[in-house]
Length: 244
Ligand code: Z5A
Image 1 (cartoon, rainbow, N blue to C red):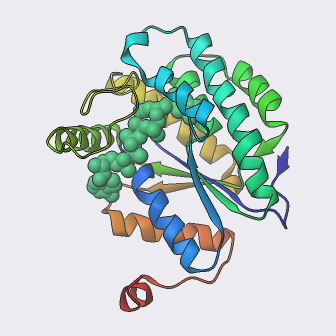
Image 2 (image 1 turned 90 degrees about the vertical axis):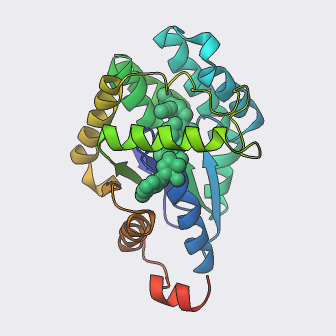
Image 3 (image 1 turned 30 degrees about the horizontal axis):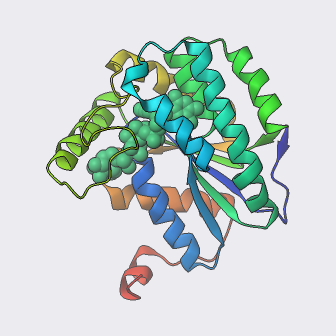
């Protein structure tokens, strides 16, 4: 298994169940790393390229409810192969730190834990698509399912009231996507796979308690990153006083 070598950028992945706070935390980390002089690239899966974003719209589209688990799995990896070739690999080779909102752990968690696809099939596709590349660090933002779903529900209600709020491509504002329609048991299975995978390989994973407020969680995430990959960083107080 190849991990990103020194001289290349770091590959950091943010994972968690729906509403865990990945999309909230990732830009905060991007900003703090940038302030510390680290060159970063923020991206997401499924997505991150024109082809990947088109495939994302298909994957989330509720008209395709009942898509076969095998089709869902292959489309995820098609998007990932393009993302790796066009965005992730070139950025890492240029020394950029890639901050990715979800990656292959999401496939093990959602298609494996959620849909019941055999993990060995996922591992075989992982090998084919990634050629052995694995993230340097997977940050599993962990919240109880009830907390995540409540947050996601509140966000949906809020965006419905704000015409300017961006909607997912192909989805009307406030409409639930194909994954958001799953029940709490689905997300419990997803969460369990994340935790199992993180506990099995602690050198490449960190489980972050993300049930606290956004600032506390951000501090936990940044402390974890800077311990694993030391970089010069401002404390929250210094950053606040400096207005950054
Ligand atoms: N998927 C898959 O099945 N297989 C794969 O291989 C991959 C993906 C890569 C789209 O992903 C779907 O694709 C995803 C899994 C599947 N579906 N689900 N579920 P996505 O990451 O784009 O979508 P998402 O998981 O639905 O993201 P999300 O709901 O946006 O979750 P989040 O990014 O973790 O949450 P957030 O947007 O940062 O926060 C949600 C709300 O909570 C928002 O209003 C925040 O303001 C609020 N929030 C955030 N942090 C806090 C704290 N600390 N306290 C209180 N409130 C907070």
